[in-house]
Image (spheres, rainbow, N blue to C red):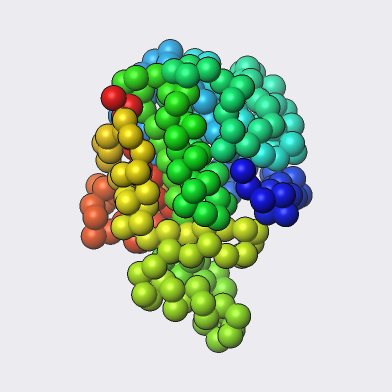
Length: 271
């Protein structure tokens, strides 16, 4: 389990403003959702059941509920759960949404879901032990032959964010640990916007190898090559943005471009 102090601070962070995360994917930087759903759609078949662990305010849950999937959302934040239910009503779809912890899915039986998303908890689990526990739990409730989608915040993504949004942080002594660790190509658990874990591509791949019964299908950057250019793209026309989004899909799985993204997804199949 997460330590109580960490759990509560993470919960408080997301309880404070569910709309902020909804708008991040809907308004401020939609390329992440665009690329992620395009890649997911390779693997998700019509009518399959989905468990969205750490589903936040429901962006992905509602997206797939609107496509006819039976979706269950579980999130640490009560306010995220309430927000997701409200948004589902607004969009005219039904999702089952509940509060819970990614490291304990005991409320769900083995082999319960065709598809499982683990697209938020791995940002905040501070030890390898808890990260492995969350992935094992997600794997347990996934049906054989089903797909698990795991997201990570990349260590170099923190550098991209600093350069793009807060350039003065390069002069801040308290921020130097992030820049130094990123330059050393290492991962880091630390207190940032809340308790956070940022990983290298190498360490994310290594973590997934600890999980028996999973085979990696693909690895891709969820913003592909576009994360550094968020501010430029938001001033472009919709037609121009969408052309760049489509072009970025051609790069998202290329190893040499993975660190252009802030978020990494590993897609695995349960044997």
